[in-house]
Length: 413
Image 1 (spheres, rainbow, N blue to C red):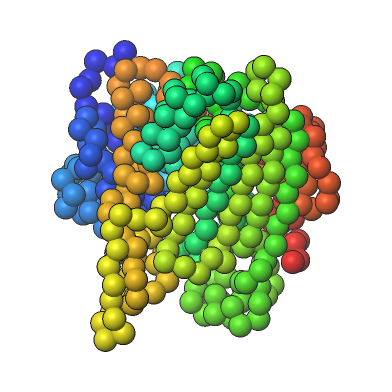
Image 2: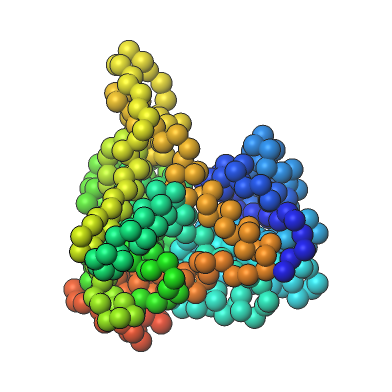
């Protein structure tokens, strides 16, 4: 067990998701942000300044991953860099440890990797070390989801049996940064970016509180992908202009819609289904997360846009986009739902509180890189199903070397 009472966290990456982590750490009492590194020093310095403003630390800005890991004030590293950098980042971390640096754990943002081969390499690398490892899947820690699961499994399941169907959807109008739109860098489109959330939320809801995270066995996967909005000529041109030419969907589109139906078996043999849907083509009051759980005599649902707080702004009230109210808000006027504390509602507070406590106590978190590998396997099975128009049975040996056509810039909608 770590004898330290506070965990020093070093961040690799200083982008959008790092901002959410910094906000969430205000509510985590036993951690400090002690270091940040990013390829662009100006971005790292801005993130460090944000940490200071939030009162969550006075982080040093490092020029490399290796020097960050060697910083004696860093006990654990949160990997929040783009998907195509993950293996190189972990290799650099291990090189620093081999040279004498000391760490307790690594936490990696979703998805763990761009494909199964990379995910297996990530697990292989971390298991060469004594490091604890956590898979950062924030939606599992959202208060509404956790409370709903607790009530259903405590009150409803004993009376009528385990749930059999979980539905989860995440939808918004598109990513913030150009690299998310790149099939090569990101590993795909919206399926790889967000269906990882939806599938894992469904698996979590269907898994009993006293069962291991791998208690459910994936039987088969059926999926489809499409580019419904952003490959249209006018929107492809708009995307190219807004990203300064960094994204060209006329040449190399990624999917902006994906759905996957995953059949699973419970330890008792019961058939379970996760229905996951994701979209970058949703135009509404902002990011929408919807989860449902159905059982023999009960159901539960979560909808983040069914907010307890709303504000109405008339057409005479003008201003900039309303992302100060809810992530990826698409309007500045009208009836505006407000998520009062997004870092808490989306699960970042609960996630980071759990990871910090696990690392301080010297135990593996509930979500590890093995879960990240399991999720990546389902994502790749979904791409394979969509490409070949068939149900993919698992295990599927072809997934070990499979790279989606979207990730090879070989897909056309």
